[in-house]
Amino acid sequence: MIEKHEVETHPHTVGRMMANAETGSTQASSSGKVRTPGIAAVLSAIIPGLGQVYNGRFLWAIVWFVITPGLWIGSGGFLGWVCHILSALQAYGYASRRMQHH
Image (cartoon, rainbow, N blue to C red):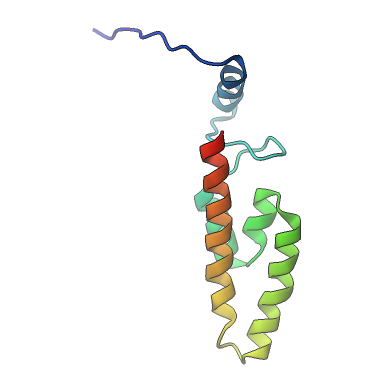
């Protein structure tokens, strides 16, 4: 037999939980859209800056969009992969922190 437990929550939390339940989400960005750390990381690993766009951090996206080709070309392809890793870590970290705050 399953028992029901009462949980006391803040009204804003209840509203956010209801919105998340409707969308099946676990996190909301500043724009109210769902953001998953794993997706943000994969997007930035593929194209540095894309995870930042996904997270709504457009200035950081521009930085990665400019720096990455510069390092690929400037280093003859030797250091470009570093941008992919760092961008993915940044996107994942930001989405994770946002998830903890929501």
